Image (cartoon, rainbow, N blue to C red; front, side, top):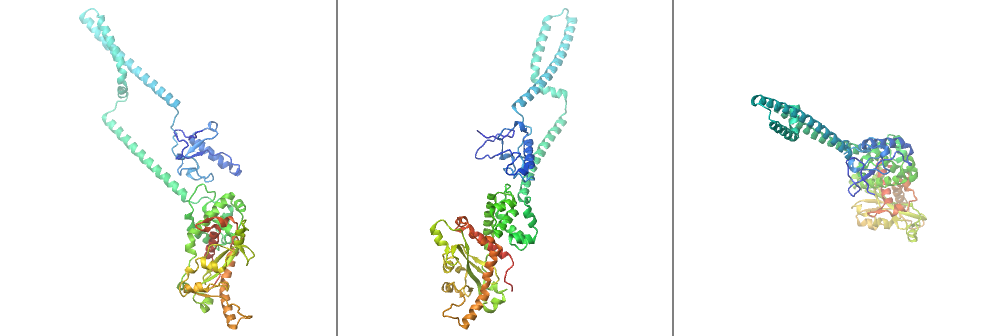
Length: 521
């Protein structure tokens, strides 16, 4: 069955370059509370299309030519210009039967006018001929019938020829106008045509500006959950781990451009970002978030993935940065300034539990003897100020700390003269020394007991290296999604050799950097 557009005068059919949209129903089983909105929208559609409810087919469609943006808006966006069709709705369109009927009426009127003029003209001609005959009878004698017959024939010829000139003569005979008036009328017609063209141009500009306005204005907030937390520092910190509501707006303004505008979104962009941050902070299930925000589970998953990608791409290179030693010395903490003034990095590894893989090879590769479970391992580095300046991609739990340091790209950030603090398990002093940097770790126990000097050195390193442990603990405490267990699907979805969980860990570090530091001067 060929699908056609039901708008009168529109002959669009289903094709590759034509999009058809069905007339909305007055009910929705998934959202029974929106019955009034759906009924009002359907009534508005039918009134603009000049279609009665009884004349509507089971499946009726409207093409994209009748919408400003090329498609109808979301049914809850009542103020949108595309909530109902607006363009190319020709109300003067008539059917073939109506046009034929109008043509017959105009033709009958014209014939009546022509008959009336013919009768008047015949009477005038007949009177003039009769007077001529009477004069000739008085002057010449008896009446000549041949002359009368000749006049009658001439009258009949004139009566048949008269309708050919009546359409031009009749208006002049009924509404005589001068040449000046005709010139004024033609000038007025030209002015009307110019004004109509200007009006059409202004209407197009108005529609374009209205479309742009609706695209960039905020969608209405439909979630009471977000409305209560939006302007509250307390609830924003509880649900998103951001210290203030202003931090939320800063992230939104920096990232929102990466998410395209779409009228079919159930939630506005701020609500979508809030949903993603709530899931990072509390690791809520998709069903729970779908219930809280009144959307489907698939919508929650789509919003979460979109905003994680946007934050990762937009802010990673601007928030997780490696400062130089000169920049760190401007505000170096005293605990570092006294003992380790050239420190630029404190590094450590942390592991997060994952679901047990089905493949035995994957089980063996991800099993960590240190944690006695299947894990994914990350290398993290912080500055003496307590901000994350490096986060690696994920490695299987079986990989050693030395392997991760050698292959994660951490060494490329070091420069000559830099100092690095690490745990004694990081036996990478040679690799770091090749970069011109110095690695400082607690002393190894070469005998039954450490010497006094080794004890003092180990205590001093531990006192400042403990900040990396505090930073890792702070990230885990703020973001429950970092505690695991990690779903295997988040580890298999790779994009440019980076899986989804790698992006999640990086985003958690980004948000952690936007919060106040744990280390004070």
